[in-house]
Length: 185
Image (cartoon, rainbow, N blue to C red; front, side):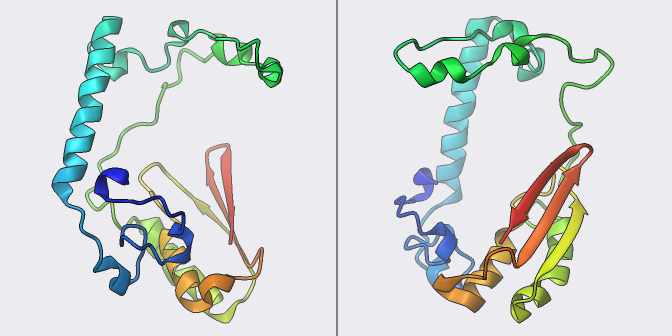
């Protein structure tokens, strides 16, 4: 975000980003001066650093180290008493089932801006936002469904401005297998 000109004014949620980055409002978007090349340059630098770190580790790709708990070690910070309460040993025990994949299967998303779930949410939830009516809904979610509540936040910001929706008006449960994520607006 900083590479694109973000000034970290922490007003992303208000739909009034002074640099036009974090907004759906066309008037504010006119202020955006960032260029695609700046993002490309940043990610190329990140990729180069990752390659250098992998090289130092003696591996050729991220696929070779995904799930390799033996490469992790616990650092303790005795000067911070609260750090003793954090128990990380369980995460380093290699009891993960050998027949299960270590990561989600990668599926191509040809239109990363508008997932089917985002479209469905917009169709189903915007009327509740307009009426200020409570709603509880559940949806399956996948790793290709990115920035799901962004458009809903836009509609909330346009309709309710700074006062926002009353708490717990929109209640959405997203689930993927046994993992569940809850968003409340």
